[in-house]
Length: 164
Length: 85
Image (cartoon, rainbow over all chains, first blue to last red; front, top):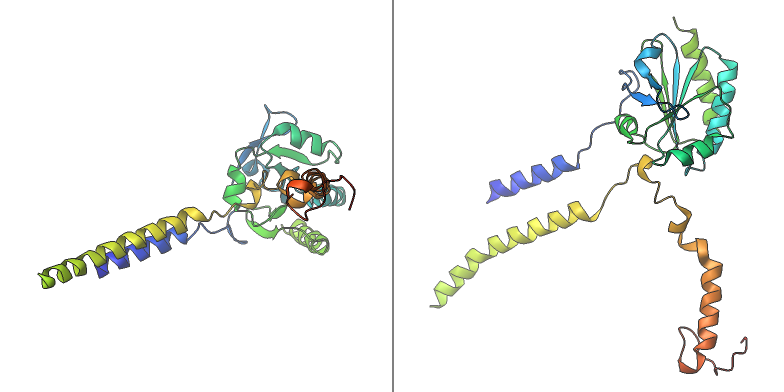
């Protein structure tokens, strides 16, 4: 009886333990996603090896995402070599297209309709931003967004761009 | 006879406790769902906000209580005259 109770408790606790989010320093989870504007064309994170990549997960239903996208566009202007992937997690592609119309097109918009990449990165908030270095390692993550994050992200991008 | 009943009740207790524990665990597991931030599209819909239609609800309630005043509306009972008070 006691043994059974112990086994049950262990099984219950094991169920509560969730897959941990990718931590800075480890390899960035790879993905292959279609472009939002051209559904036939896909982008793979692995293909961008050798470039600093900023990955931004956003959605049309997320009000703070309206603030991050112009900031990211500005970062791209400051660092033309920076690859920026803005990944929409909208179910409905039309909503995402409607939302992105107003933003700068110097950013690559992708669509993660099945939210597989979002699950791999285990987003802690919306929007979530990730910085991947030239070697493909996840270096910085920002779950959620505040205005204070802007300078931090700018400094992090600068640091990664200067690395060989 | 008494002893037999008592021992039978004693045996039934662990089984009942086990069933209750399992039912509790099942409810605990199924009752709460942690919705991931990227999967909150439907929860973020303005229609999910109880306050989104507050003014419309207040108007409907006012209309209803005025109309049903004579019969006892949902709030203060009036005279059914249709007056604004």
